[in-house]
Structures are given as C-alpha cells and as structure tokens.
Length: 160
Length: 310
Image 1 (tube, one colour):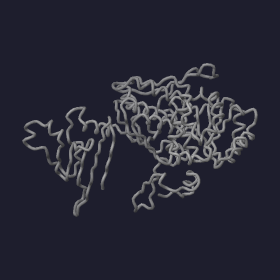
Image 2 (cartoon, one colour):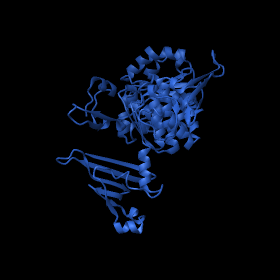
Image 3 (cartoon, helix red, strand yellow):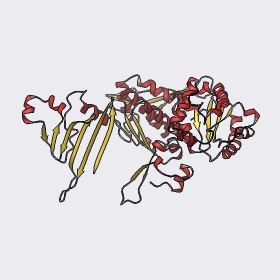
Image 4 (tube, chains in turn yellow, brown):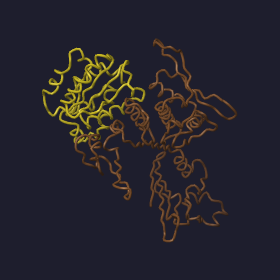
C-alpha cells in the first residue's frame, strides 16, 4: 500500500489507454519505488477526471500533504484544455497537481509507431530518469513540456 | 490431444511436444508422438513406443549401446522425457528438465500454510503448504536471497525486523517473524514475535511473493503461474502486488496470472491479456488475446456486463 504519510504519487487516468500508459511508466521504475506510486481506476473522460478530483481527491490531498497527483487526460487537440483543467485546481494544491496527456489521444501515439502503451509509458519513465526528452519531445507529447519541468522538480526525488 | 511448449533458455530455443491418442478398445491414452528439440535439432523423437535419440545423444553413447542402436522402445503409456537420461548438467535435456521441475505453479491456501519444515525444497507445491521448506531450500542455495526477501517485505511492512528459522527439533525448524517499533512512532510494544502461521492471509501472500522474486533472482529464469494472486489481499495492495511481480519478471522468466479482480486486470494491457471463455461444460475453453477483440467502453465495465466474449 502507498504510505499516505510519506511522499507518494497518485495517477488518475481518464480511460483504459491512459491507465496502460501509466502501467508502462511504473514498469519503467525501479522495484524499490513501486510502492510510492499508484494508478487509480479510470473514470471515463477528462471531465470525469476533474469531477473525481474535486469530489474525492481535493480533501484527501489536504489531509495527506505528502501526496502528489497526476491527472492523465486526452487533450483532444484543444489548445485551451490545459487552462480549463488548471482553473479547477485550487491554488493551494497547484504545486502538487500535474496535468499530462497525449495531444489528441493515446491511440494516436500507437498509430505513430511508438509501440504499445506500456512501451510508450516505459520510454517516458526512462526520459524522466535520465532527464532526456527522447519521447516527451514527440509532436503528440511536446505540449507537456512545462508540466514535465514542474513534475521533475517535485516528483523526481520520489520516483527516481 | 497435443501439448506443446517452447522456451528460450540461455539463448537456445527448446521445443517440446507430446501428442496422445485413444485408439478403439483402449482404456488409457497412449503416446502417439513426442519430441524435444533445441534450436531445431532433435534431442530425441518418439513415435508410439519407438524412441530415437538425436545426433548429440548418440555421440555420448558407449560402444555397447551403439551396437544396440540409437533407439529403444518404451511402454507407449509412458512419457519418454523423464526416462531419457541426461549425460551431464550441461546437457540440454538436463537444462530443460530442471526448468520444468522448477516451474512455479501457485494456488496458495494461506490458512493451510504453517511455519514448520523438516526438509528443504526448491519446488513448492501448488498450495504452498511447504512454504517453510521452500524458504529453507532457497536460503541454503543462495543465502543472499534473504536481502531480496527483506527489501520487498520491508517496503510493505516497514515494522518488519526479520524472519528467523530456528531449529526446534531433530531436522525440524519453525519460522517466526519479528516486528519492531519504528523510531519515533508511538507504540505500546517495542517488538513482537509472531509464529509464521499466525500471520494474516494477505501477509502470507506477501511472503510468497517475496520468495517468488528471490527465487527468480537466485535460480531463475523461472516460469511462474499464479492462480488469482489478488486473493486474500486488501484492495489498495492488489495493484502494487501485481506490478511488483510483473516488474521482477521483466529481467528474465515469465509470469502469468489469472484473475477476476478489476484492479489486477487493470495492471495488465491488451497485448498481454488473454480472455478465457467457455460457453458450456460440453465445449472446450477458448482463449483469445484482448487486443484481437473489440471492446466497447472500458474493459472492466464490459467484463462486469458480461460483454467480453472471445
């Protein structure tokens, strides 16, 4: 079980595909840190991610202050999606909540020949481990650059 | 009825196959054919009662055996694999048989698992009721395996101090698990010693998982099949448990689990999930990869609705 009183990361995926990306990311980590990250059940759409965040997770994050949260959503090619989501995140939690996802949808990453969701997730974890952008710089992922920069500052010491 | 298995060990591909038939008026199945090949070259082939040794095996036969011929007959109800004798521990036949023997087929029943042992083994039974003998056998083979066990368990149970296996009689030992208060955390007791059999069902499953990880490191690569590894676990543990096993087997070996648990199923993906389905008791079970099927909406929802049918 993730120790709620120690630094840990929760991932809230919007659907199966994002959940599998998260599986791959975790499989790219060391065995010794697996208990510090947990993927929550997928909720079915980016709006549902925000609803779940507000209803179930805001109070939890207030209570367990060592917890970080990654909202894994599809951007569906919408320029304003990131700002729409950020507006729903309370200011006091903004340093502990991160929004990541494929520019359109994860299926496009597969179609682009990056491999299975797990392969893509593991490659993204490798980038985080070594501070590279090999996979994160892909056209369908490069819009995450600012969030990845923030994530590296806060979450890297927990997972890498 | 035909069984086939293909495995890569030390860069060599082993292929074993056996087929049975039930001719008219027979009461028992008999072996129709059997074969073990390495990198495509047969170690032996067999048609009904006739076993033919491959070229390498023939080279190692004595002159007398060569006079008899590089083939022999066995009862056609017997499988040849355990009968054909290996020449050394480097013999591919030995390598394959040892891999088969060390395969882990696990269906633990924690309530039946005690901490006592009067022997050592590297081949636990399916219910893992001989856990203590497996623990003793693993540490006798590779004492350093204890650090893998300790690392894994302490991440799950930070108050674990150690596991001891003291002698309690002639040739018998009994496992005890010690817990100690973490520095700075308020606790009524400073330490607690628990006989292994008094651990909870979930804790016994953690112990088994720790041994699986350590065994794969110590004498793997292993094939591990675990029937419903999520049984007996608290909900927040399931995902970590499955991913820890998957992660450990990335370095070598193979892990297969069956499950009806949504959280366990979520920790696999379409390309490594096989859906088993049987329409009735009179029809065979069909198996199909999930990525070859069309699933509407999320997988767990479709499973709950009963809409996933190969």
